[in-house]
Image 1: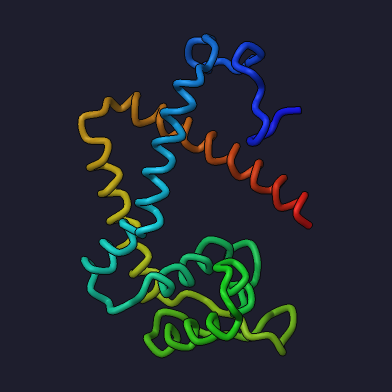
Image 2 (image 1 turned 120 degrees about the horizontal axis):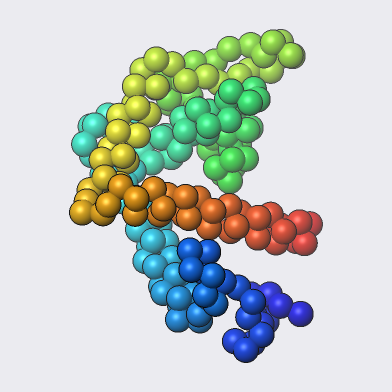
Length: 182
């Protein structure tokens, strides 16, 4: 049985490095684990979001841009309610409601009636809200560009492809973990 708690013995590994076909080494996995820990700390400190908020000077909080981001990310696939935002951000619905109310007052979000159920109130990003998200996205892209300065175009492309693949693998593991928790 293999899992994060019970990995296969090093002698039984069948993983290979995709570029070379050579066996993946425990040392390579250790380097990835160390990089993940460092990345987690940067993400936990909300480095890019905090930097972006400081630079655009809107007076918003990180939870505000998270809420707007939820709507932008899933709003084209489904109707978004305050409950949806709270669920996606893993916060209490009353906190989600306060965040949305504040963003509506600031003109970054607007409420609308659901086309599916007129009793439901939907939340949408306004043009001003899209502008804030665009500014934050530009700062994120600038940060990535600076972090990869000196890399070849091929290295950036390869990293992007492999990072996406790695993230998808983690997401699949997380889904399996959540499925076994239910």
